Image 1 (cartoon, one colour):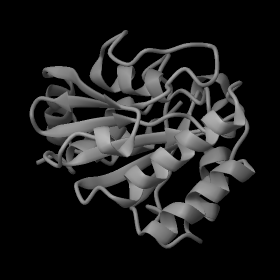
Image 2 (cartoon, helix red, strand yellow):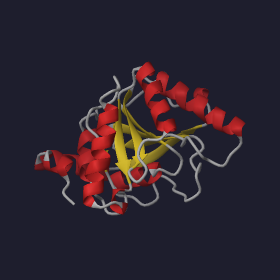
Image 3 (cartoon, helix red, strand yellow):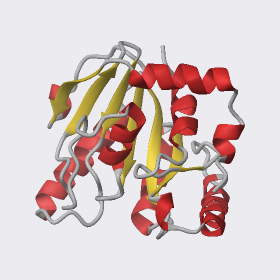
Image 4 (cartoon, one colour):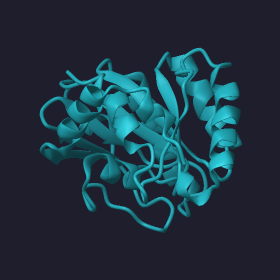
Length: 215
């Protein structure tokens, strides 16, 4: 299927982003409380979304690694905020999933409080990639998260995952539907990107988008 986002990027931008994300990338901190968050430093890109939407898989695909961020078929695997230092230029931040994780209500609330505190308290946070399963579209929990990001004045961009499981026409329809929603939200980037961690579709374009935010 055509990769329109990658086509809009120059070869130089695509290559520079590829080199950045192929560089050293190391886990530096896992924060289970606001007090344990690392000090401010590099620009930060955070990845948020419902449990099992593919956050860790996307981080791995962006960096060309299989096991940088731990993945699991069991929802709720990420139970803290994980920070990765990308070549000394960006922090990639993997947030706990929200939604149907099979954990206690108190644990869900603790994760939500931690994520909210992080999103509102990081001046170095440049953008949140809000991941949406392309097969299912935006759910109520996603819309609530968008409202919270709007109120916190945190810039975010919708990124569709698992695009390889849709036909090309359905991918374009999913993008169009998500863009209609995004353009109604003050803090949302108007452009929606579609990706597949399995096939690499859309990964180069997303890398270029995020590389532009690097220090």
